[in-house]
Structures are given as C-alpha cells and as structure tokens.
Image 1 (cartoon, rainbow, N blue to C red):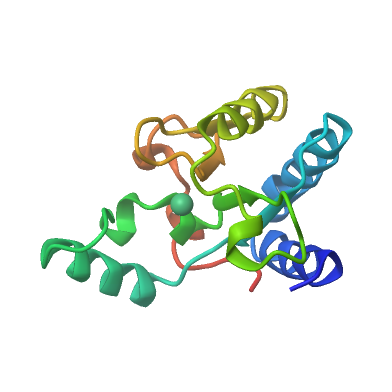
Image 2: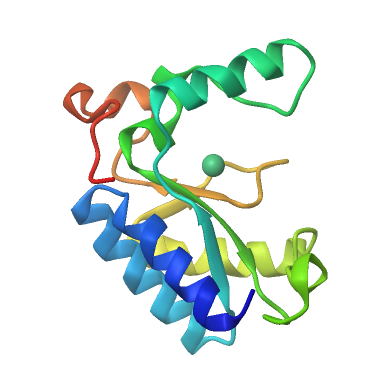
Length: 146
Ligand SMILES: [Zn+2]
C-alpha cells in the first residue's frame, strides 16, 4: 500500500463509527500525527454477524473475541489501529508488536475520551463515555453509519 491508500482506508473506517465518536477519533488521529505517530486504522464498526463468526472461531480455539453484545465495534464505538513506520514496506512497515507506540497512542486517547482495554489487546481503542458494554445505547447495536 501507500500512505495515501492507508489514509483513505483509515478515513473509511472512521466514517463507519458513530458520528460523535468519529469526530473524537479524527481529533485523536491529528494529535497522534502531531506527536510523531502515523496511525493506520484498520478496523472500525463490525456487523453483528461478523462478530458472531469471530466469537465462534474463538470458542473453537481461535483469537480472542467477545459476544457481539459485548463488542464496542458492534455499536460503532471502537476501532483497531497500528502505527505505520514505512508506508511502502508492506506488513513489515506496520508496528504490530510495538508496545511503546501503542502505549503512546492510548495515552493520547485520554484527552479525547478514548480508552484502551489493556493486556493483549493493544491495538483496540474505544469510547470512554461508556464505561462498560452495558452502558452502550441499545439503539446503536448493529446500527452505525457504514
Ligand atoms: Zn477491536
């Protein structure tokens, strides 16, 4: 990919979020860039069906995934990101294992009410205005812009 392609996909994923959250994610992105990071947002909202499949895979021994009802992605209030170190370097140009960079991005999130969920889920950030999944508006479940 190229920087332009990453930016285009990042914007598509931001546009899939609830508008008030998307606004804060754009501010977060700008501040990250200001501080020398180059985030690529590779996931935004996720359909209930897609999350259900991920959950089933997890129960069959795959990567960790919660039920759709508990996933902020299914309410349009979470995103997954990775820092780009070399936009033209393919997967090797993405800092998947860089804990320090993730910590910095998570720290920057605080001023925009964006939080991480801790251990093992470095790349995931979500809306801090909702303390737990039980606080998320039911009307937003499976219902988001894209
Ligand atoms: Zn996530």
